[in-house]
Length: 262
Ligand SMILES: Cc1cc2nc3c(=O)[nH]c(=O)nc-3n(C[C@H](O)[C@H](O)[C@H](O)COP(=O)(O)O)c2cc1C
Image (cartoon, rainbow, N blue to C red; front, side):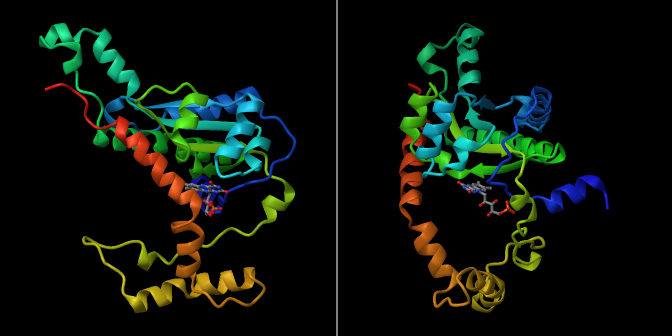
């Protein structure tokens, strides 16, 4: 099998790491690979922060839904959707003079710009994940970085048009993590459609979740009365961390709503 395809197919998230530092050149390769990712209009609408300060790692481990392994990871990279750099540049490069507009007429970034910048940041992030995997490192995304927007803004000195869309923790996997079974995915027929979207019906869902239910059952010692949907609904979709994530994202979105004077 092609080596890249094998790598992609064998990957799984790693949440426990050997007590082994990551050599500077390995970190450099990961960051270089992230920065080679495709980017909208080659604008690189993202920034990366390498969190090396243990106090900040400790705070992130708490603010990201109390996940202690974040603090133990030898490498923590945060990926930001970043339109601040271009917005600032538009002002300093003289667009106001060139276009004969006032500074407060320079359009502020909006929701679509945020989505495009998020795409850029996440694509770069995934390049980092794949590069790390190729170099023998495990990784885990931390979606909870979308929570506590105000706290992270203050902690990392983020300007208004910089949004923390993703955090990834990296480290050499422990033996236990190497041996851990790779989580299964849903069958392709529920994920890949041809030419038009197919909304799933009850029979599809019964089939789609039959395996998930069996897996959850064995995880819960062979007994499980609730459906996968009920468990997901209560433990994820309506959980406190999800409520906080939505509140936080809403607060950030407010920043990205048009403020330009017409
Ligand atoms: C956007 C995103 C957010 C995630 N957030 C977390 C997280 O906060 N904590 C965690 O332990 N894993 C997190 N993960 C890892 C997923 O739980 C993991 O990818 C999923 O269970 C599938 O397992 P696999 O990556 O081993 O195939 C996240 C993954 C993604 C893509």
